[in-house]
Length: 109
Image (cartoon, rainbow, N blue to C red):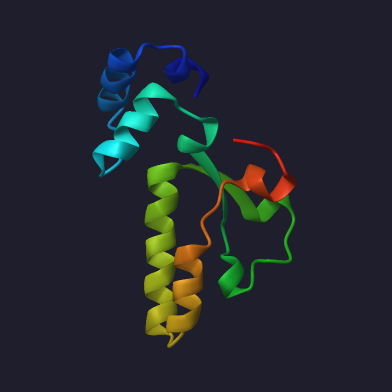
């Protein structure tokens, strides 16, 4: 994050493309990432065993950091597993539940 944030917007775009980063799908999100990147744009905490699958009461051994695109991909996989298991309501709650971990501790983005 700090290396990318130190770059000028055009350099940021080149650095992200060279790193095979999956860029945001909307022009507005891409513009915000290039003009005003935040740490939460680059990585997020993820439960290895999902909370929805019993991993909520865990210690740090059940947590890992993932880049934002990879975390989104893992969340989509979880939603698919929950839907197959008949938990459509739970899958929808998972879809709405992605937040920057700092927001849980009152830290501003």
